[in-house]
Every structure is written in C-alpha cells, then in structure tokens.
Length: 75
Image 1 (cartoon, rainbow, N blue to C red):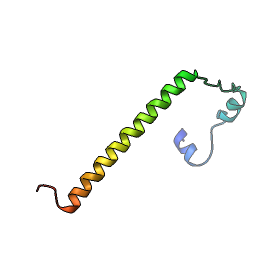
Image 2 (tube, rainbow, N blue to C red):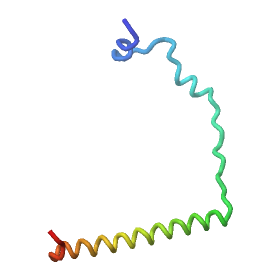
Image 3 (cartoon, rainbow, N blue to C red):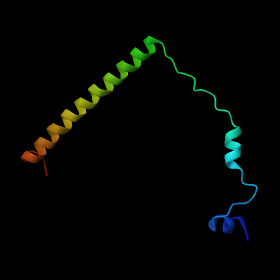
Image 4 (cartoon, rainbow, N blue to C red):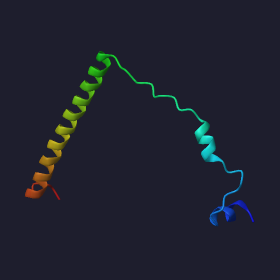
C-alpha cells in the first residue's frame, strides 16, 4: 500500500506529526507598520487623484453611452 492509498482510506502514517510541529513553533507578534505623516498625506493625494481620474472617465463614458443610445454614433 502506498502513501496515497493510506491517505485516501483515512489512515495517516505514524510519522505524521504536523499538529505537534505547529505547536512547537512560536509565533512572533506582528510588527506595526508606521509611516510618516508626509508619506500618508502623499498617498492620500494619489488616491484623490485616482478618484478624480476615474470620475472623469466615468463622465466621458456616460456621455458616449448617451450619444450611442440617442443614435448620434456613426455606423
């Protein structure tokens, strides 16, 4: 019987100790990521610019759809 047959039958090999290995590993607390205020303000400005660009594209696409629906598009 190979390992795949053992696994599929629901039996695990006696050397399978993954739970015990996980208990022995000590977890370190996460290190907080802190940024300077100027960096955060720069990132906020980029987000605002992206939102403005998306709003402009949305407006442009809405105008194109309106022209298309009203029959002003060239065919």
